[in-house]
Length: 415
Ligand SMILES: Cc1cc2nc3c(=O)[nH]c(=O)nc-3n(C[C@H](O)[C@H](O)[C@H](O)COP(=O)(O)OP(=O)(O)OC[C@H]3O[C@@H](n4cnc5c(N)ncnc54)[C@H](O)[C@@H]3O)c2cc1C
Image (cartoon, rainbow, N blue to C red; front, side):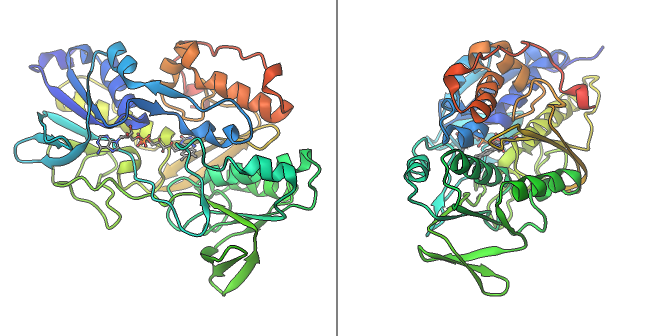
């Protein structure tokens, strides 16, 4: 069988140290002959941050995990550069870093994520900042909040965390006996959690109804003056002592690469940057509408396969139809959501109380999830189990965290 070893020492440069970048590294190494590739990872931060559990963490679950990139790069024999991609010389095939280094590449994968500037006049939930929203629990406990609104901003690639925060807040208020807390959720989406349009979204609507959360769809929060939220269309208002929102995402603005008006790097459905040879953009950094770790990982797997095929390896083409998988923490049993995506939109979705994929990670990534599960001390499903148990039992101390079934490489129970 043809493999990547047939090509002379191709140098793959991966810019980024998040889900998309590391899934690309793992997927390349898993390919036939992938062991012979020279791979460099350029990232300004020394950790891969696992953000999805940051919401439950604010309600007392164990701290969300970070994984040392140097250990991951060692495990997968990649050269790590603690730097940032600033510019690409597409003619010369050279990546230029923030420190002014010139790194030649045969193939460049841009997986630099999105910048997260805060919004004014509201509390922006910043998952990477452990202090973000650390006032919420104590204020709920003291009964200092009477009306709280959760707002999905006009442009966010992944709205689920705001639903989770609203549900967890309502659940915690019930536990504390704060039964008159008014919780509202404002979103420009036409239906709740529109990425799961259909059965998934209907199940989320039902959860919000059961939790007594007032839902305002097709609504943009235009202004917040500390007591009143103004919504458009229709100049409506909503009284709120506190407003919690998500960051607006902004692309990475890499000089030399084509980008949209928000600086996201243009990429086609294969991750290829149009008009630029041997450069791919994936994950939050690219122009895909939904910005989600599981999707970023599927893009990474597809790019890895494309790189291998371009070099003549006999590798099966991964499915072009991405599957969105998510776990919504509710304060009680989590809801497992799944949707098939086409043209950036959900075409079929479902919701269940059992996790239909394995390992049961919030970021469903073919290579990264089993890798983390295999190293039980790093395993997010351990943290996930603790978080689920915490949200059920309210006391992390009583949880017996079973390590996940290490090394199982299936995300395939759901097809
Ligand atoms: C609160 C919250 C909850 C979430 N929950 C889920 C969930 O349940 N499931 C899910 O699948 N997704 C979830 N997501 C989304 C998920 O975290 C992102 O979609 C995912 O991390 C995107 O991966 P990425 O590699 O593209 O970007 P990131 O994970 O942001 O990684 C970007 C990397 O690039 C590095 N970088 C930045 N600039 C440069 C540069 N110029 N050069 C080189 N490197 C650079 C950064 O340091 C970082 O290492 C959640 C997000 C948030 C905020």
